[in-house]
Length: 313
Image (cartoon, rainbow, N blue to C red):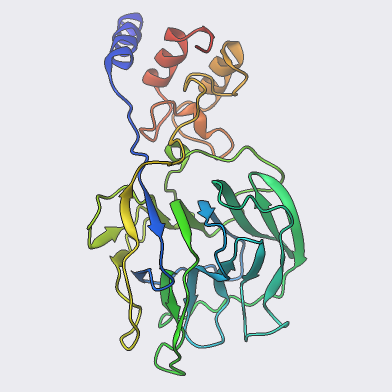
C-alpha cells in the first residue's frame, strides 16, 4: 500500500503546476508609501530585515522600511544607489544610528539585502556575502503607538509631527522582518518560493497583488493590514507604488530542479537523506526539503526526489 501511495504521489507531482507569480512593487516617486497597521516586537533579542530589492540608479537616500514614533525608535532602514545607508536609528545620532557606505553596491540590479542583529553585533549581507559588521547599541523601542511603513515615512506618532521623509526609488520583490537571526554566516540567498512564514516572522510581503490593489495583507502570523498609497498619518501627500509589475522581475524560484535539495545540480542520495532527516517538518536549515512548499516534508517530497532522480535538466 505504501508503494502505491508513493507511485500515486509521483503521478500527482508530475502533472501538477507549481507556478510562482513574479510580480513586484515599483517605488518610482519619493512619496510612494504603504502604511502598515501594526508593530513588530523584538524585545531584546535578535532580528533580521531582508528583501529582494533593486535600488534605482541615482536614487537618493530614502526609506525602505521604517517603524518610529518620534526620534526614539530604532527600526529604520534607508539606502541610496551609491551604497550609503542609515539603519536602526535611535535618538537620531551616533548613540544608535548605523551610518556608512556599502562598497560596490549593485546599482540598478536585483540583490538580496539582509540586515541581521545577532548577539552583540549587527551584520549587513549583500547577495549572501557579509559586507559590514558593527557593534550593536541595544535600542529597540517596541512602542505600540509607533508608525510603520514601507517607502515614504513621516515621523511623529502624535508627539513631534514632522514632514515626510522620502522613499527610496526602486523595486521590491519581497520583504521579510523576523524576530530572530536568520543568518549566521555567508549563505545562498533564498528565492521567493522559499520564503515562508513561521513563528519568528513579524512581517512578510511578496507584492504579487494586481495593479491597483488598495490593501495588502501580510503573510506573517500578525496578518497586518497594509494600505497602499496611504500615509501613516494625515498632513502629508502620499502616492501609491505600482503593483503587478512583471517585466524585468527576479525569478521566483531558482533554475535548479526543486528535487535537488542540496543544490549540487543532481537529485541523488544526499537529497533523499535530507528528505528522510526532515520528515514531518521543515527545519530552518533545510527549507528546500519541502519541495512543493506545502509546509511539511512528506510522501509528496519523497516522490519528487524519486521521480527526478539523476542530473537536473
